[in-house]
Amino acid sequence: MAFRRRAEGKLVIEQAASRDPVLAMLAAADMATDGIESPAACYLIAWLGDQPAGAIGIETRLDAALLRSLIVAEPMRRRGIGAELIAAARRAAHTRGARTLYAFSTGGSEYLSRHGFEPAPIDDLIEALGGVPQVEYFRVRPAELARQTAWRLDISKDGVIIR
Image 1 (cartoon, rainbow, N blue to C red):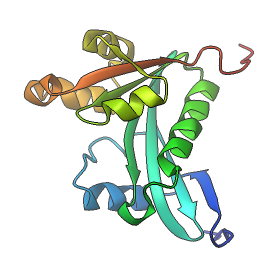
Image 2: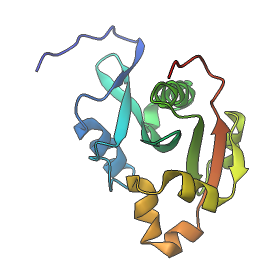
Image 3: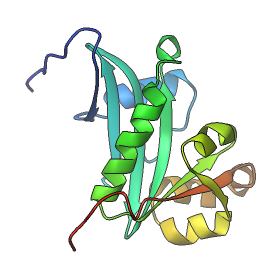
Image 4: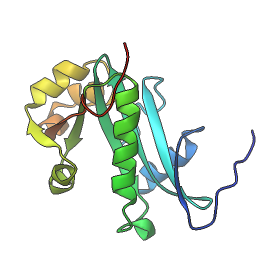
């Protein structure tokens, strides 16, 4: 596998060639890793030079996508990396045909709200994204699902997609 050189001190967001850095960041933060190997998921990694600074995933189904596993490495926080990751995930979801971007949250509600997300009925999220790994993870864990808040963002006007 070829190694891509990244400019020192420059933030670059790329689709993950390997899920290993994503798994390592999520495991270190004690975040769920179930389902991230699914072909239905796309992961993006933020690199600052050659150091992974953060990651985010999307899981798509028809015209909806689920934002999942947003993480920014502790020493890299407060630099706008999370916002850059959300913007990149939004573009990735839109290019895959999603018109609505959803997210689960147990905290971070203010953060999602700042990025245009609005609260949504959890049943709407589950109906739109049934079958994607993160939704199925929560379906079999109703106690964990009950602690979640659903969020929705209309991305249908983010750009032109010719179908």
